[in-house]
Image (cartoon, rainbow, N blue to C red):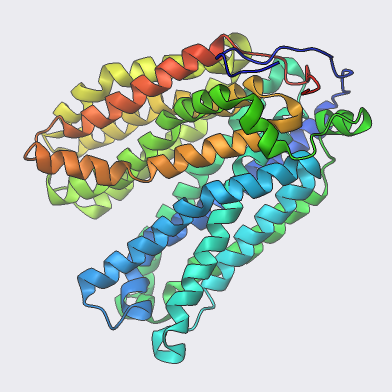
Length: 447
């Protein structure tokens, strides 16, 4: 059995059918959702608030532009180490279990984020301040590498087959929830506290909120059981000795397909919520509050659309949901950015809504797509690696788009080119994945 020919794994020996309890499944999906929300919140808090405090407090000996560049470099580090975390925690998830691994990753993320809020600045401890900040960002990045795949699996592998499309989609709500919480803090705190106090101590508040959020996440995750699929793998001695190596050896083509299928769901966020915001301010002349409000509206809408797309995935399969999202995004990529040139708030909101809904189809179906193309003994490893690599690649999208802007002399269509390319990549890979769909609990022994 191999995927090196481009075919999906086929079942050679079926695992005994696990028992699925609906109440346990609901608890598991809540645990996954709260954990993914904390993950997103912790990660976005630094990305959004670092421009306020990092240059002045942690890189004061650099000029303002270099200090800001230093804070961006610290952001990038978490993306760079993410695949390393995927290898470490993906392997653990396939060896010691989904639940135990997720307890480790969420603890690392929550403590790492909270400690940033307690860090002394450069004026207090000198060079140790930015070094400690960098170390905590590495902790965040490593934990992120293992969090997403485990969160999806703790939900999917507890769910009965007919509900797996929805249960794989619900943890994806963590991204808009994290964005909403972070955006709300960014809009509320500075006017209430004031710019001076915000720089002096107010920036610490969002990071310190990670501690109570971590307590809630741990409470929910400690209360759930290990997944029936993993329990069956243990009982029937079907675990791999080194799952991550088996994943690379047996499923190289499937991993590449999964990376491509993830590009639109992850990459569109980097394009819309990172590059487009900067582009909207510097080129189109929108104000930051207008852009923040438009982004917030788009994120609120996702709270409705992601569950609806999950229900759709129950009926037609998650891979087909991703295909629809990729086709739709490909169609609207250029018209959307053309209309944005007219620079009205109404058009901006419409862009964030339309440009958010269609890629959200790809985002909502992504977890179910990956869970269906990888077998249980290596599923945590393979999913984590594919997602982490896609996230790392998506991290360069704002830079690539800016480079295209310079090359095209700021032509209106340059962001549309990037969006169309990642849509096409996801479309091709999702079509391939739709032909590989397998039952989550139909897991072979990997010989």
